Amino acid sequence: MSDDIAEGSGAAARAVARITSDAALATALEIRREVFIEEQDVPEDLELDGLDGEATHFLARADGEPVGTARLRDYGDGVAKVERVAVREPRREEGWGERIMTAVEEHAREAGYDRVRLAAQVPVVGFYERLGYEVVGEEFMDAGIPHRSMEKPLG
Image (tube, rainbow, N blue to C red; front, side):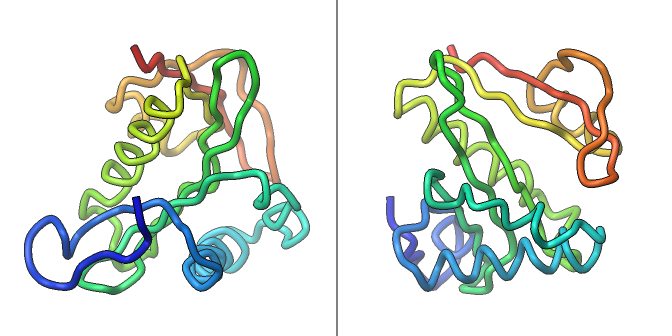
């Protein structure tokens, strides 16, 4: 996969791809800063946690415009962890979250992972449940926001 998404119409103009360049990663970090730090008041040192170097990153673009991002990290024992799923506010409710998750899960499956895990903010647990994720464990706080751990088999 490439981060160079073709311009034009149809699927190529509305795509999610694995990030392969520093420029695309900088764009993903801008989206995360906008969504998590500015909108949700997550402290910068928690959002920019120093783990980006060990992650695979994804960037969603609509007609060349960056609209969302996510990262995937190895969690051990055949499990990958999806993190930092973010869609810019004006592009929410357009299906970008699902497109991003589909691309991330496809990559995880191709990389040999059996299961994906994530920590969902409580207000979006239903979104992840619609994608086949199940809640595991109790509610917990992360960056002052209530979360639930969720998992999905990739089989």
